[in-house]
Image (cartoon, rainbow, N blue to C red; front, side, top):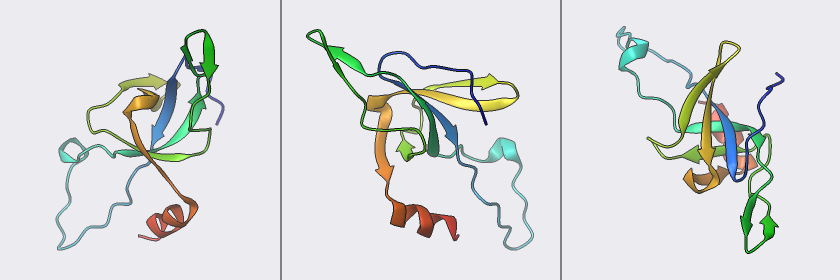
Length: 106
């Protein structure tokens, strides 16, 4: 999965992680009624932010799983894939390895 996008400054490109759909009671919820996930995987990271002439690298790196605000970022579509461009300050938390494994078993 090669993305031809390079974010600038303190921006991060994230691909939303789709939740596994499990239907209980036979009710199927259409995609248009579902809330968008607030969890994603970092696909690309900008060089960092500049403060007083110094470059400060970002705290996230490619491959990190992150949680971001519900209405954060800008949705874009590149080569039929949907991505989200976020400022680093819109990222609320990084998920650790143990949490990733536990979250994946749902």
